[in-house]
Image (cartoon, rainbow, N blue to C red; front, side, top):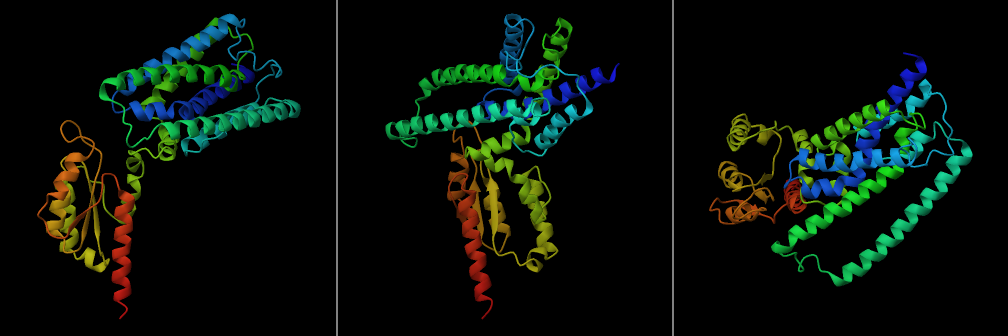
Length: 355
């Protein structure tokens, strides 16, 4: 294989994965977050792949083999060199560490002239500004018409809204693909042969499947956190491990861990003033811990659960009904409130210990 073909292949594969895993998640992130509990990842992967393949082959057929929808007309084809492949390699690194970026500037800047980049920058800034103004205007109108807390969607209407969400997301996905496919197609000939199209389609679908299997990866975590999604506490659960607790997978393991730490006087030596217990389903862990510990315990019921008492209702009721002394309960998923209360308790104890 010639070096040009080698760098072209490497650049294309790196760009295909990094662009799909970075930009596409920014486009499909909210759709993935709102449907991941109801649909398996491969169902959503199949739906996204259908739109992906349709967009690719439709663009290829109507644009004489050009899958970039004409966006590369002002960027002439040039032999791909090693430094061209560096751009998607950097993008891949940023994607793996969870940094959302504009793939257009990062990838196309290695091929385009300064004049073309300047025009791209102006169009992008104007496009982002227009989108922000329109979105803010729509939000102001809807915010005055709809009360999110009171105007709940009726159960019998949710299916229609879900269908509408899938349709609008499909159109958004098609629009993004027809616009940003150029970030990947820049490594391919302007008239892509059928063999390369089959190979490109396979690579795209496989990488898209891996992205859905990872539930969007680290970029999706940022999407969920920006949306204040109630499931965002799951994304930050690893931060709790820095306190010294090992990762447990059952109530029995957690209780055993607590007993061992009390037996070894680790809590006393570490001057533990308060314990926060986060539990879902029936929420029994909070009662058990408070019956073992001799310090205040704050219970945080989570929205994990299904059936009767779903979305944390059963866990909240169980903690509130507990007869265990020393247990205080906050609202469902209110980890911030629990943390603030624990900080106040610890601060008060520390200030009193000075006298």
